[in-house]
Amino acid sequence: MPKIRPLSSQRLIKILEKIGFKIIRQKGSHVIMINDRGTRIVIPVHPGKDVKPGLIRAIIKEAGLSREEFFRILKEK
Image (cartoon, rainbow, N blue to C red; front, top):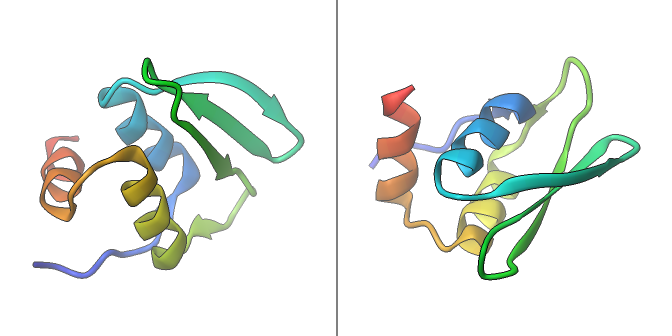
């Protein structure tokens, strides 16, 4: 299994949109996304900075994805 590398926040948002999350609002530098089941995820959007692996792991877990599913979706793009 490959290591989780830092990703841009825009790429992470696109991945979450593929699995059914929608952007409901943005407050400052944070985008709030929600899915049909009511799971809410907050993504930091700071220009020029990537989302670090630890936060990506937490977001994957919160979204209900496995690492395998995450890497499969990541490769599709």
